Length: 183
Image (cartoon, rainbow, N blue to C red):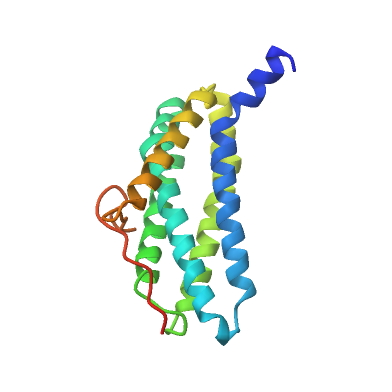
């Protein structure tokens, strides 16, 4: 591989990492969708919603702490970045609702569906408009990717400790609720 090819591959590290997280979340929503209408799958639905909430919470944290500030300063498009911040706030609100709901509750499936639609739209916009703007701005994606991966690993390590939890409404502080007990 040439030095140029090597740089090009490394140069997309941050965007590949974020795109990979987006795909993981899309897959979880897809699996949840496949269980709609199946009452005997409530335990799996609860597990999937916990995974969705966990993944989205970690993802939004690394974006808000690292990716968005870098992008905001590099592209100078406050409208695009403000919209992304508001979309994250909307996702946190729906996540907080889901963290206290159970499969079979009124609006449980609908809340998951709305979260999936809103997050899907947000991810599409990021992977299109936002990633394109980041490429044009000449951001060091290799360094940024290393920072994103390190922060994600740090958050995951914090969560694996006995006291480590995250609350979706307080993405930078607080505690995530324990998994739902089975009915």
